[in-house]
Length: 129
Image (cartoon, rainbow, N blue to C red; front, side, top):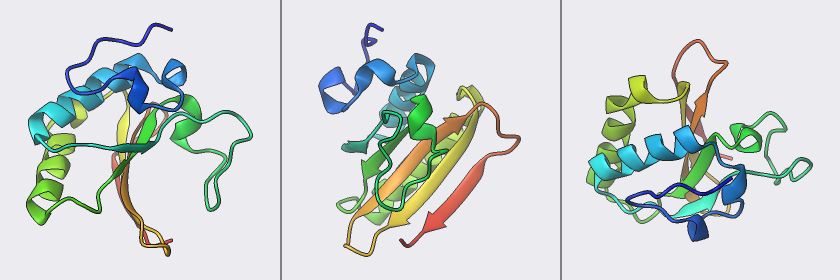
């Protein structure tokens, strides 16, 4: 797959850009543009069998439909803008939104942003480990 030309992301920001779903990437670029908040991708598509500690084998990452973005340096206003942008473009996403706010025991904070083409509803999830 040829990585698409995006306004805010380049292939070098992804571990496995060739495995990412292109419509998801276009949608994520729209979200980033509206939010006007820097997004550092810490996880994207995963190879089969590559299950991180605490990860799920059914994660949207395995289908190229999710990224984790670092949120620990975002202000409260930044978080609001990202959440608002995700909701604003929810009907244009290539699936139902899966937004999970993750706060790991090691102090890492990130937001899991994914789209699930098999889901019936959007989901806002919280995880503290």
